[in-house]
Length: 271
Image 1 (cartoon, one colour):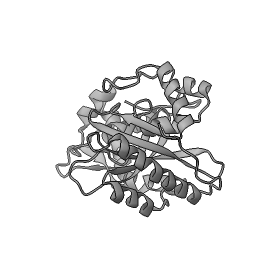
Image 2: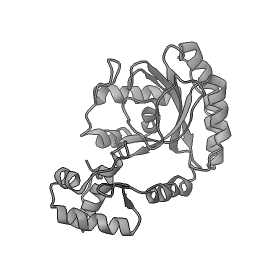
Image 3: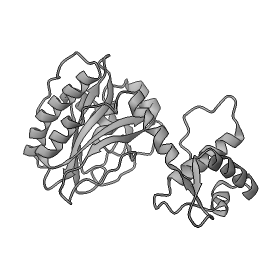
């Protein structure tokens, strides 16, 4: 349900907590049909009158709206407006999209920018090729760290003790037969990524989908995001991935410079 941080609030406000839980439940309704008060009451285990009062306030502040039928509720565009400020404030929304578009055009594959949010990866930006057969990812989509090239890159330079603490309670879900299924194996993979300068997702998150990712660094030379090129495995051959690697490295270097990085392009090792 709610994606809370590891620590509990010192001064919890129960009504606010319930309101946030309602927001997250409504955000999970991808169909956009909305949910009724009874549905929310059942999911949260609290009374309908409480749900109604919270929703009434959220409607008044334009965070929630009633559906045309007037008997269900869904999130309003207000959240999208506020959410768009986050990458702008963190200087990721101002990345040169032409760099990503060039990669996409050159290889005919999907190009994604991902950031780490707690114990997951969130797609912050993407460019899709014109082909109908492509990686089906969405901006805002959350993915696991252990089964994606983006996740591996984003954790590749985090101290081992911090990685262990971050993932100590995480289930290493086997999305496919190639998924890493334990912490020890993941730590070995991170060491490999750190050494070679890029990460590969060899059908680890989705059968038939392969991906290569590399880091974007800020002015302190710290990894703040990652860029991936992903596509169907029958197109993402070893030779193509190695070709992408060189151009992806150049692109990430350019994007890093945009964020104030002056370290220059890193050397990458071919497998």
